[in-house]
Length: 73
Image (cartoon, rainbow, N blue to C red):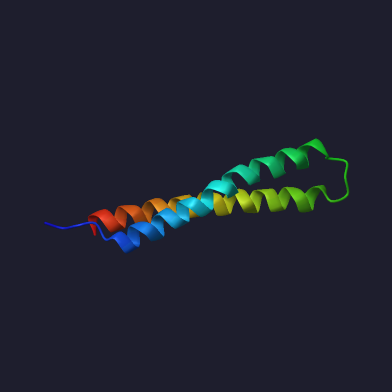
């Protein structure tokens, strides 16, 4: 019978813990950017917001994949 690899599980939980604040910060930055569309730094702020959201999605995907690997691999 296989057991869960706890080191890999904790690594996956760390990825998910890092994704949580990013998933809250990203929409806030995008909302702020869309609220100030006439500002000269609009494109910079909106690109930062999208990068934060993409990194949150990536970390969530990697965290879930790592947790599944720790349980079934």
